[in-house]
Image (tube, rainbow, N blue to C red; front, side, top):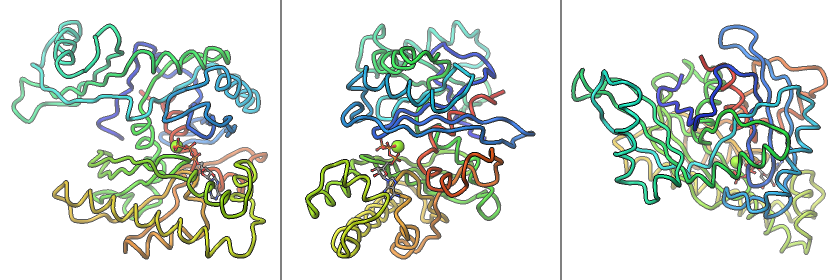
Length: 363
Ligand SMILES: Nc1ncnc2c1ncn2[C@@H]1O[C@H](COP(=O)(O)OP(=O)(O)OP(=O)(O)O)[C@@H](O)[C@H]1O
Ligand SMILES: [Mg+2]
């Protein structure tokens, strides 16, 4: 389990409430509902990926509240869940986190006051404009009478936009998490697919979606490194549009379902996958130069771009690191109406929604 897991509850939390994981990403609204079948064992009950209209969500901001709420409503209807509670996440870029050290043995109220005073020093907004949350991580290295505390803060409006969208779709936000934490949470479901459950190994998770590439390195459930950059599948869609004179919608559909001219692979797809593999290699280089680590044992590819056929081999060849496509559902049961082939094609895009769905089972 993640030690640094921060519920970023922003005062909504109801312990163990039945809930749906709701990820509002730039290309789609995604929902996942899980059930627990045993200690740490889960079953996928239902999921949905509902495309968002263009520019409804840009750079993690909900630019068009109405269109996004409509999409959430549609997604929820298709999902067919009886739950109304949702766990959502803020993009990591919208959350400021900081570790501080405070005296142990304090009352919760006193700690809150100190956290607020500390936060005041480095958060560039007025305190009444931010949502603040904190979590005690454990004893401080300095001594037994001090504890390390992780503070997270976000602009209120960012939280409120998401809550309002859920609200407009008839859903109740009970948890506001951070997308990076949700991704790490979902990794817990993928770890059993790695040798020795991934223990004592550095594992890179590379989530390449529509407009962003998130790169994390984790070790034993702790995040060692994180980096994000503007790079994603939208770039390939644009290349397809230009090369074959198609609309965005046509290019998007052809990219997923095929039917492009013969020269697509060599002239358009290959240059894109080469750039992508190069970006992964560069991200690894950043990790090595900015930490004391010299090795990464596995690369997990996630996000829609992970579905590009053969990408795992291309990345493995370029980096010399064992590379696999992330599937948080392998090893989980699922209803007969979910076709395994469809699920495999959707799974890499569902890491965040799945990590959020797991919050249902937090102790
Ligand atoms: N089979 C496929 N082959 C190639 N690309 C695909 C495939 N399926 C989806 N994609 C691409 O993946 C992207 C969507 O992936 P994903 O759902 O992970 O993005 P997102 O989370 O909405 O984006 P971001 O994280 O940048 O906000 C789109 O660019 C889409 O075209
Ligand atoms: Mg994404």
